[in-house]
Length: 316
Image (cartoon, rainbow, N blue to C red; front, top):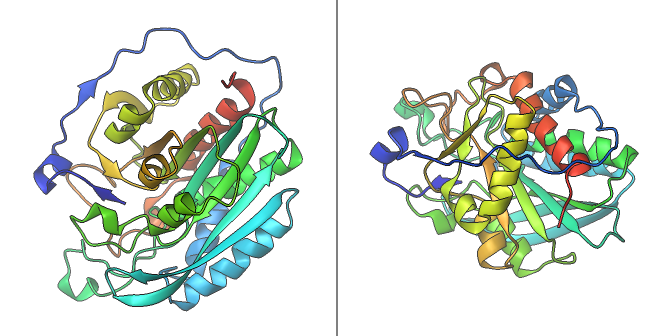
């Protein structure tokens, strides 16, 4: 993903406080499944054991095989969307794979949950010049969102909610040029241009949600696309006492939600903590994006929110 403001604005973003009121989403009288944050963290670590998963690498191929095997063990309809593209930062032709697993296919209302599973080929934000040509391990930027969706997939496989769920693991998200947002999110762009499923009613992207110092404000494009959904979800986070979620609007981030909206007209929002770990230090697109800088508790906050939203909210 790429932020759409200059670096000074990334460090000191314009923050707008949004007042949501006190009402929370209506709930159904059903049991909410438990989101196992420890298990989700093991998925994060497992991804990193394959090494960087940048397109064209052995880690990319090996984790692709692992993820396919993982999904095949679940009770869902699996679609593998293969495509060929040129990775902007390397100018190399690559083979991409989007993995889709569908649950409760007959449901009229469908929610898409998405994350990217690839990692970046260059650590171009690293302060050490010698590191800048190395691929990123991507514990947070890649593995964290994927790990949340892997755990959600197992939960939904065992207990279908009332709504339809399409979980998409996007490839080719993180190979763009700094400052050129349209060169990012190529896997979701391909997905949006060639929808392999019925058009979902709404989409939530999760990205960079493993930071030990997790802080999730409202991404500005998300609020512009779906303000009512944003208010509903952040109100739910407040009701669940999830401190990472802040009712403020921060900078614009060009992530996988943007092609979903601009190309396929799927209302989509991004749950993301772009300041990793904070406004003074940066692990993003560096060699410091490792499991040691991530936390199961952070994954648990996002997973808990999504489980409650999926099983406890009235969707319309």
